Amino acid sequence: MRGRRFGIVVLTALAPAVWGSTYLVTTELLPPGRPLLAAVLRALPAGLLLVAITRRLPRGIWWWRALLLGALNIGVFFALLFVAAYRLPGGVAATVGAVQPLLAAGLSAALLGDRLSARTAVAGVAGVAGVSLLVLRSEARLDAVGVAAALGGALVMATGVVLAKRWTSPAPLLATTGWQLVAGGLLLLPVALLAEGLPPAGLTAVNYAGYAYLSLIGAAVAYALWFRGIRELPPTAVSFLGLLSPLVATVLGVVLAGERLNALQGVGGAVVLAALVAAQRRPGPSRRPARPPSGTARPRGTDHAHHRLRSSGPGGTQDRERGAVAGT
Image (tube, rainbow, N blue to C red):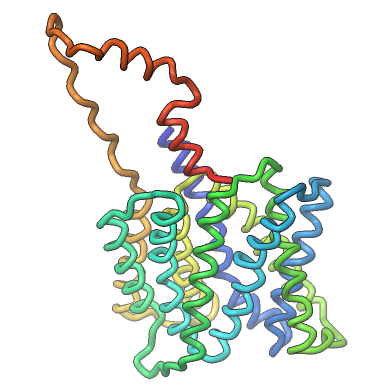
């Protein structure tokens, strides 16, 4: 069981690791000044491809659930992310966005009944501190609108993660991933056309390669891994994996772009990794009450209560608790 969980964590972590390459791909391969176009071409073609492969459409309440989850995880999140990126230095935006695991932990406690432990809170604060050491610069300036957009992006993404855990779709994973990508892309499309106009003429082969990478790898594959992790893991643990994005972006900048890493950034990276590992640890199993010694008389009514508990079957307390966590 531990090996299976570890494998799921590793596969889920690949998604934010891939997203950490987005900045480098955008700056090196895509035309400048078209971030919303990049968001649309990242989400919409990938979603349509997954829907075409699975040949499944939402049914019943999953039409509006897919629309809401697509807005939270893709459409609104991308829009707020780009507002923050334009109005804030990258380090400030990444540091503010690093509060997402703490927000996810609070929402999980409120909506799923998960326990907000002291370890999770400490790991969340450490994650924010680690990201700030990793990417924040002393000359960074603050902008109220940019900070609000970054906080809003962290909040909608955390909400999307928790609701995706609460609402378990009966459809295949690739189908639900496709629904959300299509919904998010369609919501972004009119915004991109109004803000940036039609796509520029004369796109090069390098531009097309960049868009293809963002759509196929950065969206179709990465979001499928991400949503699979949400199905299998606690939402708070999944949210902590998102801290890998600024870490991978920094490493790629050093390896591929010739940037230099100082000692404080190294400390920040180590703190981020420590927070990730601490957040993935599961609480130990609760101890069962000791059984009375053989021959000890039971209180009256114990056998009857024990029989009722055993015969409760799928309607018992444990199954009701599982149903509350899964939600509908």
